[in-house]
Length: 229
Image (tube, rainbow, N blue to C red; front, top):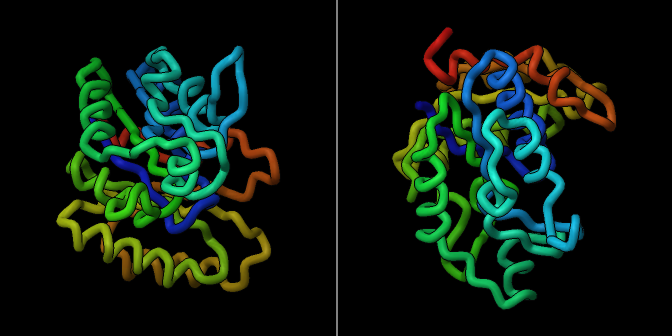
């Protein structure tokens, strides 16, 4: 059973798309996949309950059918930083409780479990806690999604350094072509491959405004994450 924490170089870099693609690709190969998003900010009413679109996508793409509350135990209404959304609702984001929830779900039989963070590596959860504290509490290897756009070198290298500073393993990274007009894309990719010190697990090509996880999965090697490559 393999479990990873998934972070990104910023918000809006494609973490959910990559997670959904990996979950769906694994399910298509008869692997048992589970996707969790412990904290989600930005929800709408679905059948009388507040739900987040990213969490719903993970729920749909995984092979194991979990209740929504299992996938996303903390659903915050405002689409702002989690600590701000939580403060608006009088909610305390408890890192230990969130980690305990993820570990409990990880006891379900699975071949691949992905825990998607919210925003970037150091996005605040409270006055003195960040998403990195949740990843550290879990202690699982980290996958990093890098948006290929201007500034990606600095953002990726800083994020990788911060991950390693906590003592966690950067197990790999995924490149996401978020800007099809990016200058010197190949050269930037080569720089990241030379400097990140972790394998590139694949590249998600530019898919337009409506990104399909099935199309994204074509460039990703899900078997490598499960030790089946």
